[in-house]
Every structure is written in structure tokens, then in C-alpha cells.
Length: 182
Image 1 (cartoon, rainbow, N blue to C red):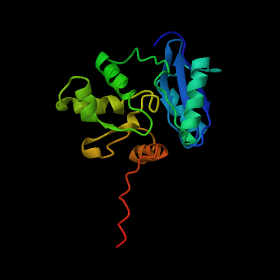
Image 2: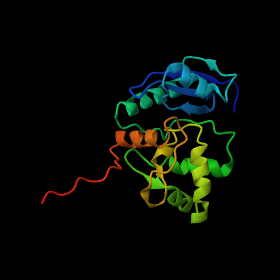
Image 3: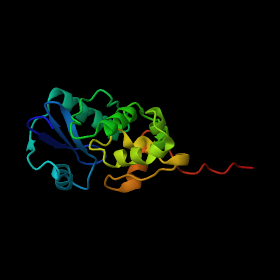
């Protein structure tokens, strides 16, 4: 973490979200909670020193992207500056790879591991990195699935059902197809 930490709670069509940043970039993002107070509490749980502030231009742009996202419009967060100073080099490499999975696309833990030159046995570590992702959505961990295209876990409020809702916003469905009419 670099210097002072700031945060902002803001409304989206999906509910109130929170974002925290330093001069280096975004270091935490909170997916929608039930209400602004819950979102603030979850966001600040690891950042007690953070101060409410007007966002920098880069953070304001990220907030607008989040609003578009929860309105069901494509949003690209791959250029949002991040402050991942507290993360291991391996987790940062996993997060970089996950950021290349774009709107409407999915991948698997095993595929990300392979993309990093690691064997399939590292899929579990990829899953652990996704579970500990401090900036969910901006690093699109919801687009990373378990083997066989199964949804897998999701550590954000609402768990896997939140992951399914986010994927549905992107046009990705896990409902079985309608039976063909004969």
C-alpha cells in the first residue's frame, strides 16, 4: 500500500458498491451489498485508516465503468490502475492473466494456471487467488470457472448466486437449454 488510502461508496443498478484507492491505484473494491452501510463496513474492514474522498480522475472513470457494468452495458477494467503491493508475485501474475478475460468470456482455474506456465495442479492456487481477490469485478474473478465449466465458488456477498447474476449481465447463462419441440 502506498501512502494515504481513500474510499467512496456509490450507487449502481446492482446496489451500493465501494472502492478504495491510494496514489498508486485501486486497492480494494466491494461488490454491491444490501445497503450503503453494509457496503462501507465490508470495504473498510481491512482499511480502518481510509478516508472518504472525491475520486481521482482514474477512480472516477472506474466508478463510471462499474455503473455501466451493473446497468448491463459492456465495461472494460483492464486499464484501471491497481495497487496490489500486498500481493505475492504469483497472485499478481494470476490477476494479470484474469484481467485479460473480457466481457462475455469465461475461462477456468486450470486454463489460467496453464496460461501462466504452471501445471493443472496449480489450479487450486489460482482458485485461492480468486477467492482473495481484493478488487473483484475490476479483476474479473467471476469469469473464472471450475473444471468442466462449473460455476465454482465466489467469496463475495451472495456467493455463487452473485457470480451467476454477474455472468448473466454479460449474457452468460448456466440454465439448461429448453427442450426441442417435436
